[in-house]
Length: 194
Image 1: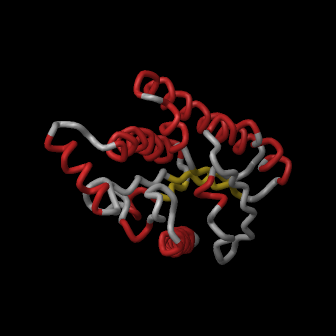
Image 2: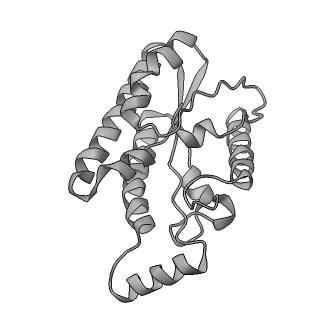
């Protein structure tokens, strides 16, 4: 359940799970919450994976970002509460970071901006996505919820997404990125069943 990252994840093979993909491109958490009844509760699955708040950050704007992040957190809490009330297991996923810059022109612009003391847009997005990810980690641990830490699985060691996991637009996930997500998810879910 989520936005375009979910929508573009072609039915991953997860042994022991029948996967119903309910991703809709471009959605923010409040839009995912708005269709939660229809796309999750009405179907009565055994479990639901809830993933995605990057669109909230993209559309939030610097002047509203704190309120936007708090709204995303409330949306997550509401979806978890609704799923649990329906006896549906919740699995949460952290959001993946953006890639810094792919082409030489982009890298040059980032370098010049860094020299001028400015951060890149990707660094700004990753900071705010990361703070909600930190909340998700704490919340999942406190509530006994399975967490898939996609952010850590995609991290290049400097807080950005590994370039091989990014499409040329720098934001979406590449086929090799989805293969890595599927492998990571299979391993985590297999290990928890032991």
